[in-house]
Length: 354
Image (spheres, one colour):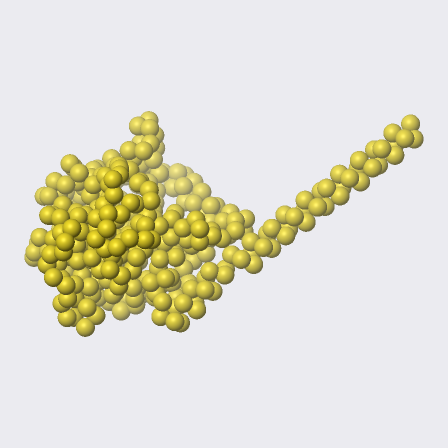
C-alpha cells in the first residue's frame, strides 16, 4: 500500500512537470510569434525610405496578406461592374457570358505579371503594353474617368479590406507605397488626372461611386456571369448560401447597384465576426508566412517572349499548356500599344514577336 502511494506521488509529480513544460512551450511559442510578427512591417518601413515601393506591394500581395488581398482585388473588380458605363461596354462584348473563365485568367495574369514582376521589368512592361492595346480597341468608348476609377479600386479596396479583416491594419508606408506604385502604372496606361497619395485616391473613389454607382440591368448580366465562375468550384447545393454570405461583405450602395437584398443582421454579424476572428488568431497564434510560401502566380524565371507556366489555376485551366504575355486577351497575338514613360513620352512599338 505504501508503494502504491509512492507510485501515485511520482505519477502526480511527472504529470505536474509535464503540464509545466507544456505551459512553458506554449508561452515561448506565443512570445516568438509576437517577436517575429511585426518584423516584415518594420522591413517595409525601411524599404519605403529607400524608395522600393514595388517590393512592398509585391510582398503585401504574396506574403503578408495574401488571402485577404486576393479577395479584396476580386471584390475591387466586381465593384467596377456596378458602374453602368463600364458594365454596358462589357455586356456589349459578350465575352463574360461566353468566355468568363478565359477573361478572368487573362485579366489576373496580366495584372500578376505587372504586380509580381514589376512594371519596370521586361515582362511587366509588355503586360502593360498588351493591356493598353486591349483598352485601345474601344477608343473613346472608355472614358478617362472610368479608367481612373478602375485604377482607384486597386489602391483603395485592398487597404480597406486589410484594415477591416487582417491581423493588423496597413501601415502608412504600405498605403502610400500602393498609391505611388499604381500612380506609375496609371501613367504608363496613359490615364490622366491621377490623384496624389492614398487619401487622394480614396476621395476620388468614394466621390465617383456616389455619383456613378447605380443599378443597371447590364450590371446584373456581368455580375451573374462572374458569380457563376466564382461559384463553379463549389457544389451547387452551397451556391445560395455562399451568395448570401458574399452579400454580407458588400456595402449597401454596391448591393443596391447589383439589385441584391440586404442580408439578415445576424448572418452579417457572423460572417464579419468569423473573418475578424481569423485575423486575431493569425495575430496571436501564427508565425509569419515564410518567403518560401509566397503565393505568386507567375513564374519568377522566364523572358518576356517565353512560354510561361502559371503556378496554379483558380477556376478553369485556360492556359494549362502555358501562356505568352503577348497572347493574353482577346485581341490578335503580338498586338501591343505604346507605353508613356513618367515624363509622358510614348515608348514602345505597336507589335512584338510572339
